[in-house]
Length: 186
Image (cartoon, rainbow, N blue to C red; front, side, top):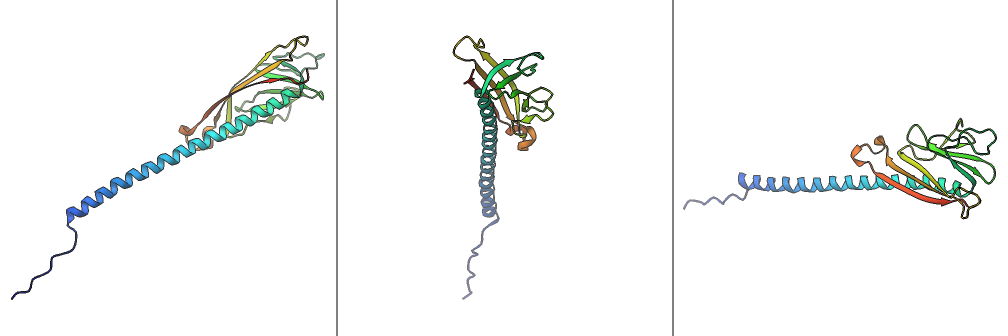
Protein backbone atom coordinates (compact mmCIF):
# COMPACT_ATOMS: atom_id res chain seq x y z
CA UNK A 1 0.00 0.00 0.00
CA UNK A 2 1.21 3.35 -0.84
CA UNK A 3 2.06 5.59 2.00
CA UNK A 4 -0.12 8.67 2.55
CA UNK A 5 1.55 12.00 2.90
CA UNK A 6 0.36 14.07 5.89
CA UNK A 7 -1.50 17.29 5.11
CA UNK A 8 0.48 20.46 5.32
CA UNK A 9 -0.02 22.36 8.62
CA UNK A 10 1.01 25.83 7.26
CA UNK A 11 -1.07 28.89 6.33
CA UNK A 12 -2.13 29.70 2.85
CA UNK A 13 -1.15 32.98 1.20
CA UNK A 14 -4.69 34.36 1.52
CA UNK A 15 -4.84 33.56 5.23
CA UNK A 16 -1.51 35.33 5.76
CA UNK A 17 -2.68 38.45 3.85
CA UNK A 18 -5.93 38.62 5.85
CA UNK A 19 -4.03 38.41 9.15
CA UNK A 20 -1.55 41.10 8.02
CA UNK A 21 -4.39 43.41 6.91
CA UNK A 22 -6.20 43.05 10.24
CA UNK A 23 -2.93 43.65 12.14
CA UNK A 24 -2.19 46.78 10.04
CA UNK A 25 -5.65 48.27 10.65
CA UNK A 26 -5.47 47.64 14.41
CA UNK A 27 -1.92 49.09 14.55
CA UNK A 28 -3.00 52.22 12.65
CA UNK A 29 -5.93 52.79 15.03
CA UNK A 30 -3.69 52.29 18.08
CA UNK A 31 -0.96 54.67 16.83
CA UNK A 32 -3.55 57.32 15.90
CA UNK A 33 -5.06 57.12 19.38
CA UNK A 34 -1.68 57.42 21.06
CA UNK A 35 -0.70 60.43 18.93
CA UNK A 36 -4.03 62.10 19.74
CA UNK A 37 -3.55 61.51 23.47
CA UNK A 38 0.00 62.90 23.41
CA UNK A 39 -1.14 66.05 21.57
CA UNK A 40 -3.97 66.58 24.04
CA UNK A 41 -1.54 66.20 26.96
CA UNK A 42 0.84 68.73 25.36
CA UNK A 43 -2.00 71.21 24.87
CA UNK A 44 -3.17 70.73 28.45
CA UNK A 45 0.37 71.21 29.70
CA UNK A 46 0.78 74.39 27.62
CA UNK A 47 -2.54 75.73 28.90
CA UNK A 48 -1.57 75.00 32.51
CA UNK A 49 1.84 76.67 32.10
CA UNK A 50 0.25 79.72 30.47
CA UNK A 51 -2.35 80.00 33.22
CA UNK A 52 0.25 79.62 35.98
CA UNK A 53 2.46 82.33 34.47
CA UNK A 54 -0.51 84.67 33.93
CA UNK A 55 -1.71 84.09 37.48
CA UNK A 56 1.77 84.83 38.83
CA UNK A 57 1.82 88.17 36.95
CA UNK A 58 -1.64 89.03 38.27
CA UNK A 59 -0.61 88.17 41.83
CA UNK A 60 2.53 90.34 41.64
CA UNK A 61 0.57 93.32 40.30
CA UNK A 62 -2.18 92.84 42.92
CA UNK A 63 0.28 92.70 45.82
CA UNK A 64 1.96 95.94 44.77
CA UNK A 65 -1.40 97.67 44.26
CA UNK A 66 -2.48 96.66 47.77
CA UNK A 67 0.72 98.16 49.22
CA UNK A 68 0.26 101.47 47.39
CA UNK A 69 -1.11 104.74 48.68
CA UNK A 70 -1.60 106.61 45.39
CA UNK A 71 -2.56 105.48 41.90
CA UNK A 72 -2.97 107.09 38.49
CA UNK A 73 -3.40 106.28 34.82
CA UNK A 74 -1.82 108.29 31.99
CA UNK A 75 0.00 110.80 34.22
CA UNK A 76 1.97 113.42 32.33
CA UNK A 77 5.39 114.50 33.51
CA UNK A 78 4.98 116.94 36.41
CA UNK A 79 8.13 117.73 38.40
CA UNK A 80 6.05 118.76 41.44
CA UNK A 81 4.03 115.54 41.50
CA UNK A 82 4.90 112.57 43.64
CA UNK A 83 3.50 110.34 40.90
CA UNK A 84 5.92 108.83 38.37
CA UNK A 85 5.51 109.68 34.70
CA UNK A 86 3.10 107.35 32.93
CA UNK A 87 1.89 107.64 29.36
CA UNK A 88 -0.02 105.27 27.08
CA UNK A 89 -1.59 102.26 28.80
CA UNK A 90 0.23 101.94 32.08
CA UNK A 91 -0.47 102.10 35.78
CA UNK A 92 1.58 104.39 38.04
CA UNK A 93 1.63 103.77 41.79
CA UNK A 94 3.28 105.28 44.84
CA UNK A 95 3.78 102.68 47.54
CA UNK A 96 3.54 103.34 51.27
CA UNK A 97 7.34 103.53 51.55
CA UNK A 98 7.47 106.18 48.78
CA UNK A 99 8.70 103.84 46.08
CA UNK A 100 7.26 104.69 42.68
CA UNK A 101 6.21 101.77 40.50
CA UNK A 102 4.92 101.65 36.92
CA UNK A 103 3.36 98.64 35.20
CA UNK A 104 3.13 98.57 31.40
CA UNK A 105 3.53 96.39 28.35
CA UNK A 106 7.09 95.82 27.24
CA UNK A 107 8.03 95.82 23.55
CA UNK A 108 8.42 92.04 23.53
CA UNK A 109 4.90 91.17 24.76
CA UNK A 110 5.79 91.04 28.44
CA UNK A 111 4.40 92.91 31.42
CA UNK A 112 7.22 94.97 32.89
CA UNK A 113 7.57 96.73 36.22
CA UNK A 114 9.60 99.93 36.29
CA UNK A 115 10.84 101.78 39.36
CA UNK A 116 10.53 105.57 39.72
CA UNK A 117 10.43 106.50 36.00
CA UNK A 118 9.56 105.24 32.54
CA UNK A 119 13.27 105.56 31.73
CA UNK A 120 14.17 102.85 34.27
CA UNK A 121 17.35 101.26 32.86
CA UNK A 122 16.50 97.82 34.26
CA UNK A 123 12.78 97.10 34.02
CA UNK A 124 11.71 93.87 35.69
CA UNK A 125 9.95 91.41 33.41
CA UNK A 126 7.02 89.88 35.26
CA UNK A 127 5.87 87.33 32.72
CA UNK A 128 7.79 84.26 31.62
CA UNK A 129 9.60 84.47 28.24
CA UNK A 130 7.54 81.47 27.12
CA UNK A 131 4.31 83.42 27.71
CA UNK A 132 3.27 86.62 25.95
CA UNK A 133 0.73 89.12 27.24
CA UNK A 134 -1.69 91.06 25.10
CA UNK A 135 -4.40 93.65 25.81
CA UNK A 136 -3.09 94.83 29.18
CA UNK A 137 -5.71 97.20 30.60
CA UNK A 138 -6.08 99.13 33.83
CA UNK A 139 -9.31 100.76 35.01
CA UNK A 140 -9.51 102.85 38.18
CA UNK A 141 -12.77 103.56 39.99
CA UNK A 142 -13.39 105.97 42.90
CA UNK A 143 -10.18 108.02 42.54
CA UNK A 144 -11.40 110.90 44.74
CA UNK A 145 -9.52 110.64 48.09
CA UNK A 146 -12.49 112.19 49.90
CA UNK A 147 -14.73 109.36 48.71
CA UNK A 148 -14.80 106.12 50.61
CA UNK A 149 -14.08 103.30 49.88
CA UNK A 150 -10.55 103.68 48.48
CA UNK A 151 -10.00 103.31 44.74
CA UNK A 152 -10.37 99.95 43.08
CA UNK A 153 -8.11 99.03 40.18
CA UNK A 154 -9.28 96.46 37.66
CA UNK A 155 -6.40 94.77 35.87
CA UNK A 156 -7.13 92.63 32.82
CA UNK A 157 -5.01 91.01 30.16
CA UNK A 158 -4.84 88.11 27.73
CA UNK A 159 -1.93 85.72 27.96
CA UNK A 160 -0.84 83.11 25.46
CA UNK A 161 2.06 80.75 24.87
CA UNK A 162 4.84 82.12 22.69
CA UNK A 163 4.87 80.27 19.36
CA UNK A 164 8.37 78.87 19.86
CA UNK A 165 7.77 77.66 23.41
CA UNK A 166 5.61 74.67 22.50
CA UNK A 167 7.15 73.81 19.17
CA UNK A 168 3.73 73.82 17.49
CA UNK A 169 1.52 76.80 16.75
CA UNK A 170 -1.58 74.61 17.08
CA UNK A 171 -0.81 74.03 20.75
CA UNK A 172 -1.01 77.70 21.74
CA UNK A 173 -3.30 78.39 24.67
CA UNK A 174 -4.95 81.73 25.39
CA UNK A 175 -5.92 82.75 28.93
CA UNK A 176 -7.93 85.85 29.85
CA UNK A 177 -7.53 87.14 33.41
CA UNK A 178 -9.23 89.99 35.21
CA UNK A 179 -8.93 91.03 38.83
CA UNK A 180 -10.13 94.00 40.84
CA UNK A 181 -7.86 95.13 43.66
CA UNK A 182 -8.51 97.79 46.28
CA UNK A 183 -5.74 99.96 47.70
CA UNK A 184 -5.44 99.13 51.41
CA UNK A 185 -3.75 102.33 52.46
CA UNK A 186 -5.17 105.27 50.62
